[in-house]
Length: 357
Image 1: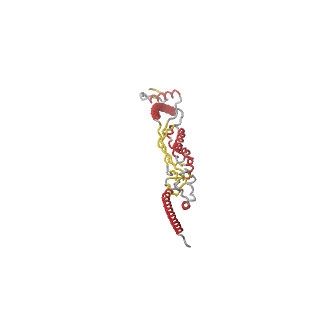
Image 2: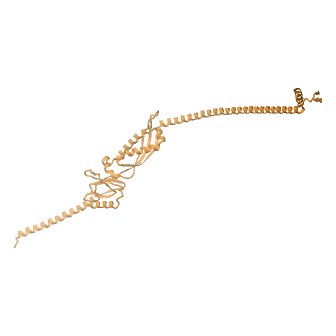
Image 3: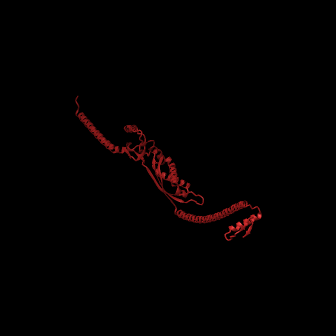
């Protein structure tokens, strides 16, 4: 088959156009490939996000486009099922602001896509420190007074409840914790009088810790420890307290002085009573001794007299005196003989009559 010169020209032009089109497609494909590689190099680092060990971020379960990551997480959980994750985070979408709250991410790097990030919470121990002015309990003549309390406590967020916490306050939990803590302390303070603050510090500290724990319990936080570091009554109360203490001490001193004077007076009275009792006893003893002596002398005299009379009787019988006159004369003579100042000589006749004196 013969081709005319015009046909050859048209065929050559078509072939040239075809080659040009193919070259253009190859160039476009190369440019697109280069752009794809460049885009991957830019987006791939943005796809991976990191959760620090001290942070917590509520986490959505891995999507189907992350099968390798999901299996890795599941393998870690199967290897160490008893180890609770120390950190976690909430996955949120940048373009829409949506936050997934049903799971918590552990510490590590995750490929969640360039349009996603984490809303993180600190999982290390949080400290609360504040100095508060409170009002003490009124009782009797004490109308209550201002007391300054310096308090601090440590608390932890519950990682498994970060989704619920985010639903309540998002990431601004510290302000709510401070507000509830202040309310709990100011509501508890009036339960105690100013004297209790100075003498029952452990009881007040334990009561404050219990009420603060209850106040933040629905925020899913645990109070680890509580410190009542300082208690400072207002200046007027301190001055009044010092004046009262001085007056009490002065009154006690005066009472002791009066008691000492009373004891001395009572002691003097008792000493006088003892001395009087001793004198009375001595006099009674002297009187008793004199009476005993007199009785003894009287009894001795009676015995002597009885013996004398018995002797006279025996003498009368021996001498044969029967006349009372003779007996009286002999008794008289014996009496005279017994006297040392009078010595008389009496002569008797043969008949026993006195002849001379």
